[in-house]
Image: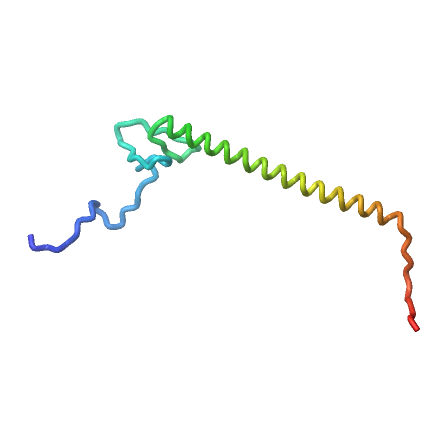
Amino acid sequence: MGSSAYYSGCEYDDYEPHFLDCCSLCRRTLSQNNDIFMYRGDTPFCSQDCRQEQIEIDEASEKKMKQLSSSSKRSTTARQTTSESAKEFDAGKSVRNGTVAVA
């Protein structure tokens, strides 16, 4: 046993972890003998609590995005209203077209 080979703990050097190896939130190892709680198709969790926490995080994130989106729409609408009122103000002005000669 004079080999100086290092054992990495895995029989395969090109091992890539499977998405069902650990909980997506707490990173706890998912065992084959316990339930796996799935969310949005391919996101595994070790417990209902972890899954529920992720659901709440996602809902808060979606709510924040909607608020940002609606405030962005309001500012765009305000800019358009200001632009339209400026056009209406300019429509009342008379403008002379032509060449001006300065001596």
